[in-house]
Length: 323
Image (cartoon, rainbow, N blue to C red; front, side, top):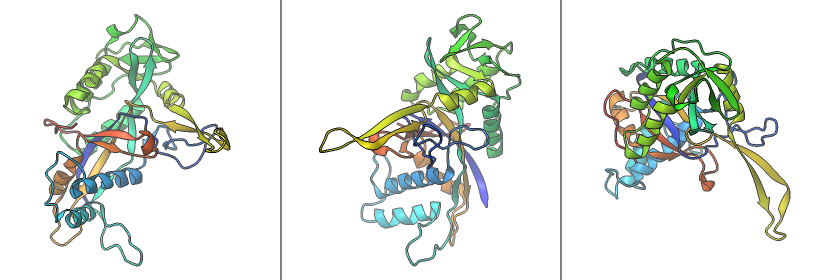
């Protein structure tokens, strides 16, 4: 079915709430997590729906700075193209004529921001998260090959990308004190690869790509699990009664968000359009490049500024310009 795979990064620039739909423990509205690892994720179904809406808006002419169809043709042509790419939406009393030729894998967490008393925050990853990412990149067969994590990182040990940025013999992340392990250049190689391929090549992201080269820390699976479980953004919410001006009874709740600066990745999978004389995967990918470098809203709480994510299509060539 699929002829082409494309690696896509998701950079969170605001808190992101992709809800799990059920309460667990003290958090009323938790985020989606993988069952086996507990790592935050974006389910493919919600991801595809949000990106479908964005592509449809572009083709309808509701987005700026893009080459669009003539105004009188935009609504009909926009819906036809979006249906060919993502599949037509089911309508009452009608059968769906064909499936789409585009699919997304679940977006998995790669880099998680953690408070650092010395550097505001640092990014962390771990052997499990990195090797899962590396496997996906090799599956995509895009000519990219991330470095292997050829070092043991266990317990309270870690691998800083640039040890000189930290106090000698101690790396403090939030309330944990970690000991640097003896494995030179492993984290630096990972940081250099991500700096070259994971960030859009625009001025607004350049300071963050540079920061990654200095403040990436590879931690153990144990420490990574601790932070992604206990260091997410949890916000209290209330509803105020319009008459009394006080909090309505039983309407105080907690909502969990993935913090800004989190970085996730997914595989975009493309096949031939399922219509007569359908185009091949390369032409389909060209249409979807409209997403590269763009700010897209994903998940819930859109009216409170949540869910703003910048996409980046990784390539071994110069990335497309974004915002």
